Length: 205
Image 1 (cartoon, rainbow, N blue to C red):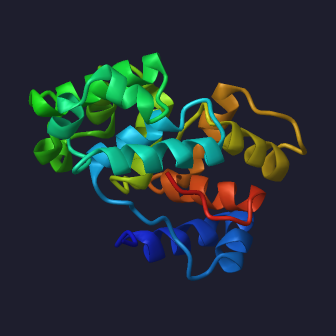
Image 2 (cartoon, rainbow, N blue to C red; image 1 turned 45 degrees about the vertical axis):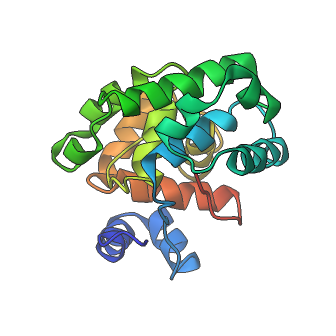
């Protein structure tokens, strides 16, 4: 699903920033695409932590095959041994189980998210073991399609800003935040274009 705001955001960014103008032209017709289900997206983010994409894909495939459906109830019905057999570490079993418990227990309020601020959703998600601020920000950008998230701790964003705006010098958090201010209210979109400037393969999450 392409965000409804994408065309307007791209036009606004291109009009006020020459770097963005070039990137918008280079990647015309492309955009962020949401994978959909919030629970599955968050489980997949936990599965992929600190391992290669290939290894994460293998674990993910085994997890999907082992469960009747990727739902909180199905995860909670699995034993630790069953989840470990899919390739999850003991720590990741804890994380996935805690995530499932938060969803099952009503501590994750997906039905309220449309009316909630980004910071409120981040606070809700980071209460789950294994989900930090960066993971929550990626979720807001790629799953919820929030238009103005700016992940200051993202290495790719830092590298791209250094390359395009600071003659190769890595920005401090303060510098990065200041530069990002010029892209409000479309900082998620600007971030996506900057990621694309480093990697020809679209970023997914």
